[in-house]
Length: 186
Image (cartoon, rainbow, N blue to C red; front, side, top):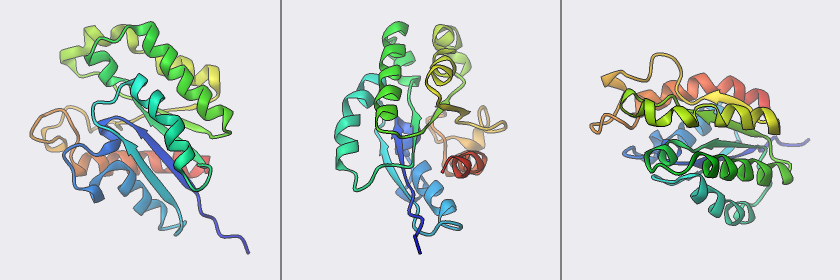
């Protein structure tokens, strides 16, 4: 009898890392807890680093992959908002995100690439970045998914005191929304 022990690599920025949250309230921890209800040996590796841009994720990726004890069954990639905030040139952001997808693809790791709608205060600055994720997902066979489901963004009871980062309640909604797609991809 083979035991299903899927490993998911969750890599990206503060939304993955769990900025301002207890470790158990982070996206990877909450996702692992829900997955383990049907797959008790499922593991989700938290490879999020607050403040990371696409170049940071790209630089960390080879080391992360080589340190894992098995090939991930799935990589969830959430990165890009910090590129917008730091005004990384659009072409550079696109090239780096594409290289992340190529690196994961060359290892045979399916990718769930998430998107984030920019908040109003940076919507104009973010306009040129908006289609990068969707276009690259289509080009490289990745699954695209909005990180935040409807009803999460813009609600004061879903963010930390900084009014930017999601709280545990918001992450629970994110995980509940993304879970069926993750399960389908495993």
